[in-house]
Amino acid sequence: MQRDQLNRLMRFLIAFILAGAAILVVMAARPPARRIGIYTAEFGKPQPILGLWDEPAAFLTITHPMLLSLPPSWKLTDTICMVMQVTRGTAPTTTEFTDFQPQAQWDVKALDALVMDYDGIRSRAVDGSALKIDNPTVGAAVTAFTDYQVHWFGDPPILLLKDQTFGGLLCYHYYFNVNQLDLFHLPFSYLLSFQVRNVLLDSWPAYYFRYNAPSDASYPPQTFTLQRDTLDHYLSQLAIEAPFAVKKLTKAQIDQLGTEVPARK
Image 1 (cartoon, rainbow, N blue to C red):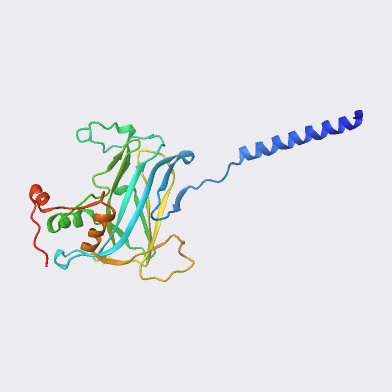
Image 2: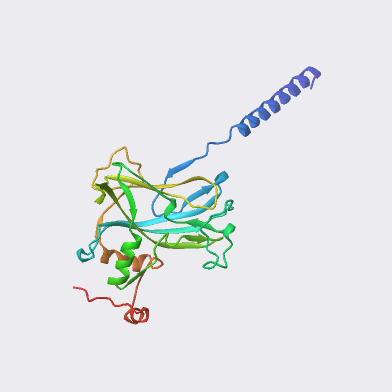
């Protein structure tokens, strides 16, 4: 190879190396876009609740959403229920939470626990109606008048350490406050998003629902269309499909708990 050809080849290689280095510098200065805030979640699949730098703080799975008609004798509004499972991820906890009760959870280190409760639920209804959690009222009625034992989600707060999982039932409804009265209302569409505490978050899942509304382009494809069912049929199905959340008690178990279940009609 002649000297001038070698010089041209070396100049080409140097230019190529410098161009590659410049591209890498630009890529490092402009990392890929990360999702911040809520993102559209899919039902039936673990959805990450992401801490800083996309490290998962937890994984949330929601299944069996249903609009339920409650027995008229309970004098409660219809409620929407769904099964929720949350599993601890790897994102480190970074902030203290003030409602930790060492006398109740003496073996849990406060700074190591991830917290999930009703305060982490955010809602946005298309008509502006407000969200109300039904777990306390529906839970009391289920305990008193049925032969099912239900694990309720979020009350008391869920404390998760590494690799721990918790599952339970969440029930809620929407309402308008008119003349200091809460009037039941079911919006055509709404979303629920879920956060955890004791960790710095980048993004978290938002689940979209609709009822009695046609599909259109304004809804994300992951939107769930609610159907109606009775509470008794719903709980009987969950006792089979989600036994970690709902368990049907035998007569011996009911007697052991000291509760009396009225005869059903």
